[in-house]
Image (cartoon, one colour):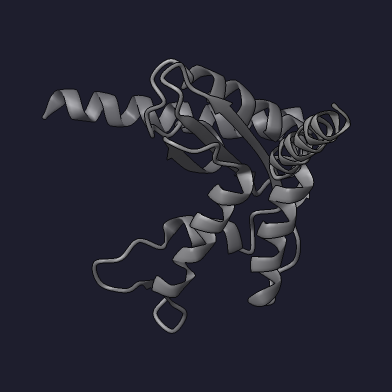
Length: 181
């Protein structure tokens, strides 16, 4: 009986360790660490965590929960999206995927190599991205949806309002122009 209890205790400790690793890999610091490591490698200053941007990211991630589609929010911030199914993907997994696009970025031409995607990487290391907020949700179908949202502006209500207004004017203009063609 003593060996059985020891086995149960060891199993519980192992399970708790795996849960804490999963939670830890979704913390704001985990997102920031990976983004800032990539930025430091190219001589760009660090981003800081922004609760307002994170709330925006969380709100949008929650909206995607029912379908888990990789559709950008079209909001006032830049963002990277991740979708995965079949594993308990973490914010670390998503960040590593975005940063892995570095191999397809040509610094001399400031563009992606022919036929490759590197826009997620450039979003991570863009010098003007200064604030970061991220979110992760499990979708209704069991998949994981993760968004990293970045802003280049100081977070004040006035600048946020101006950015949002400019964005919506841009969308309305393109909608109207598209209707007249």
